Length: 559
Image 1: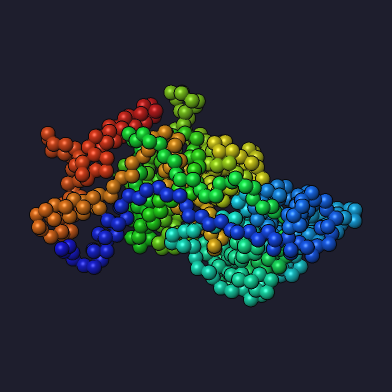
Image 2: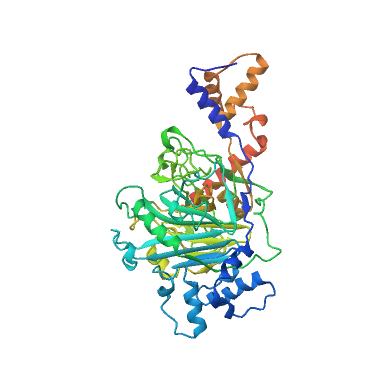
């Protein structure tokens, strides 16, 4: 029988025990759309000018789509690689008519219903992503909205949908104004974005715009009620602009996480969801998500590196530039994160480099603040000049992701050509760690890294912690050790002892066990108990010796 002082104490003990249970790394759950290409071809059959475009396809359905690709590919590079029908605000009828008649080419804005050409367009085997940036003054029926900044509307069509646990936000509400042309369309307000989601030709699409849920613009975002007007106008302008059925032989599911077999003597990490003391909202922790969302390359060029909190650095006993790693995805921040228990959080993970970086491979001297940041996957950069955030869009046959980097210096990124449309390869240097947050020296010197995936409610933030753990293991060539929670381990120890002695379990006994766990072993006694350490006494001693060696190496590097 467990004797406790209150229900709250019972909840605290149970929650800690459950959250401490180590989980195995797992692949994301992804569903694939069954694309109705015949339906898409039938919709194209109404375009008479399309018949004038040559195609060698015998299939009428394939011929219609490929005819369209042959024409629109002049404006949208790579559109024929997209595995879903591409919907864009593009007047296909007018464009094809002008093309067939030999009329002079008009300005691209003339075919885009006022939205202009896309500032970003990334097609591929998992679907496509496009972003339009424009001034409201350029569109007559939107010009009376009071918002002077550029508006950025994004649209995605994804062959892949990530199924999250807990699930992404609910279905939202109906949109009667668009229901006739887009049956089942829904409006969802989540993570400070208004999203309109709908199914077309068996494919989920989402149109997104950042907004402030209030009567007027605020925090550099337009009011959501004004954003709704923009979204309606944008969606009414969508037309099929191209696409192609996926090629056979492509991977159908994300691969299982790859981990080195040999254990590391130094690298340890706390379980996902276990935050620094007091770092969560109202005493809450994070969420134990053991999903590895992609086999990324670790985003820093060199080890050692440390995933750790920055805002609550003083609450980390051994400092933030040391092992173990600490998850900080759901720590107390003013950002909406649907995958955190409180609905608010950090959105990603802060990563710190070693106190200095080597001047060259094998050098025994180092230079501070020169830690290279690299592309974590093959993909396309999405970033306007002057912006701080760097998005790396991954579009592959088995994954569709957005990886975001923050705090690098915008001027250096501009000089290096890290702007929308640039293709990068995994491991390619894209910048250096910085401390830019709205201005120079706006934050501490670290890299913020996060991941977004397409869900039924659009792109949402997911915890990249275990994805980073797995990538770091591959970088150092050794498997890390997930640290057990002392409270949970003590509770298990007391439970075992009490069962043998027939005595009740009390909180006092658990507290004593925790204190004993932190004490040095008695003379002549082993320094661990094999049954309470997941890898036995030998591994515990190796970890201890490895930490000492690692600390000594850092002292030498500083001198």
